[in-house]
Length: 483
Image: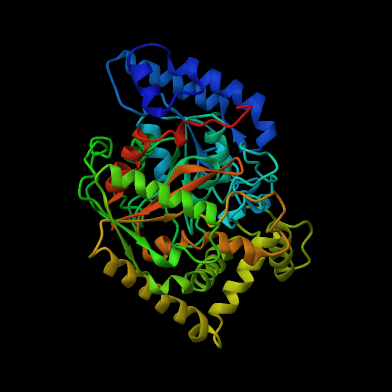
């Protein structure tokens, strides 16, 4: 049962081949057996899962149907879940139980999804390797000595190891697409505003977006259908109709215009990944797509702009964690200043502290114009580059990451080296565009992903292209040894 995709589970439940309760028990036992190797979960919710599974079976017995009704999933541990620890991978929130459900959690629960637990993540979603978590690093099931990518590495590792069919993630600079690429999954970052951020603990408010991680584009379509939609509680949510993503998967790619940016193939890209990217281009050509070279001239400025804007927003968002109202509080503070300093100094890990300090500096009176304002201007130039490109092409294709998964600890002494792994993903967040990573091959036994970008609210186009590619390739079906 653990090898079934979300779509296969939906069919199996509809045909009464098994019940949601049976499936949930199998997967909970599998998590208990295998997750100690991976460390992909922070909290398991066995009682809630069995309760939701029984309720889903009862709903099906009463004639209800739905692709997510009785389907087991997990949530990245920054989606608030009522009465369950929501830690953000941080000591700061180790004791925090959310008093309400995030909109994404509530929508998926209403659709009948079964929550198996909360997955491990980089602390406050800050990281590209899932090594900054207070609960320890997550291991990549393809090679336990390597990172799974971050910050949604727990969700990615759990799905890749077949502990469950799909999970939610969030993407601020590539945190769904990068771990998807490094663990052989399909991961989708929707258009900014497509999925509600209400109840999703913020890292960088103008960049964060929730989305699905699964093995196939078909499964991502099912999960996104349950997550997407307007939410009046989220001021950044956009009131745009949500199409039937599954119905659009089988469209023809005849005449689809694919742009391949020349800037993607620089010295920083592993040449073996470049070869796999071009092989995927050839595969899509066979399906009728037309390919042309394009240019994104301001891409070179994306990393410096991102690493000013994101820490600036983080320093503002994380100022609420002060030891006063909720979260970690230091012992025996001498006065209010001591309470603030020690609660934050002891509650936040090194990577979070680094980004708070960078952000506070960039926003300070003497440096706002020199750094933050300039970064926002570059952001606009990057968006303009994409708008110009989409006048010529329908989607943009390139590598998701410049390298395959690296060894645990290999980049710990050089944070900038880890930041450079986001070079291909962060532009979509700066521009607010939808992006998808899909499996495209292996280098040294480690998975490689190809990234697709599309104009605003064209998630269906990305899923259609990825699904057609997956009907003609088998990379996404490969399973890590031992899982």
